Length: 244
Image 1 (cartoon, rainbow, N blue to C red):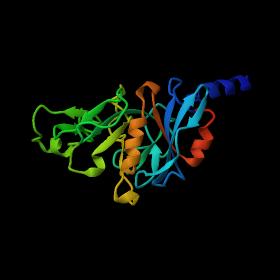
Image 2: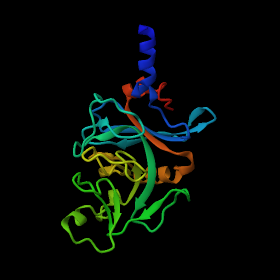
Image 3: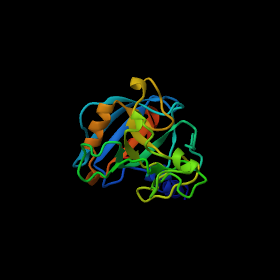
Image 4: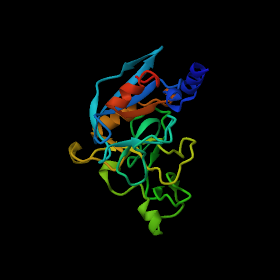
C-alpha cells in the first residue's frame, strides 16, 4: 500500500508533470549561476526527431537586478516554491514560457513571416498596474494618450533599449492565459543597456545584433519556448522536464 501511494504521488506531482510541451521544437535556453545572479548564458536549441540540437553558439545576456524567481508559465508550480515572482521585485521570471510576437519602433523588421510584429506608436500601451483590468495586456488607444496612466503605460518612450522586443509569456494574457494581479508584468527580450553593464528590472536583455538574430530565427510553427533557470535547477529538472 505504501509503495502504491508513493507511485501515485510521483505521478501526480506538479514537478514531474512539468515539461517542455510536446509540440515544441524550438527553445531559447537561459542559464544563470544561481537565483541571485543577473547574468545569463543564452542558447537556441531545435529538436530534430527526438533529440535537441544547439542552433549556433551561445551568447551573454542580463537578467533582473536581483536575479530570478519562479514565474507563471507552462510549468506547474508548487505552492511552496520559492522565490516567487511578484511585481516590482526586480527579478526575472524563472521556468518555461511561451514566446510571443515582436514589438518595435521600426515600420518593419527581419522576421519569420508568421511571427506577429507590432509597429509601436505613441498609442500603444502595456499596462503594469496590478489594480487595472488591463493588467499585463497590450492596448491600442483610439486617441493620443491624455490620462496619467495612459502616458505611464506607453510602450514608445524614445528609449533605444525598448526599440525592439520579443514577448515572453509570463503571467500571460496575450497568448490566451489569464494574468494574476501582482505576479509580474511586461516581460520581454530586449536590447541591453550600457553594453551589458546594467541589469534589468525583470526582462532578459542582450546586444542588439543578437536580439535581431534571435527574432529572425524564432518560428511560431515550432511553438517556441523560453526556458530560464539557475544551473542547479536546470540540472535537477532536465530529465523529468525533457529540457534540451
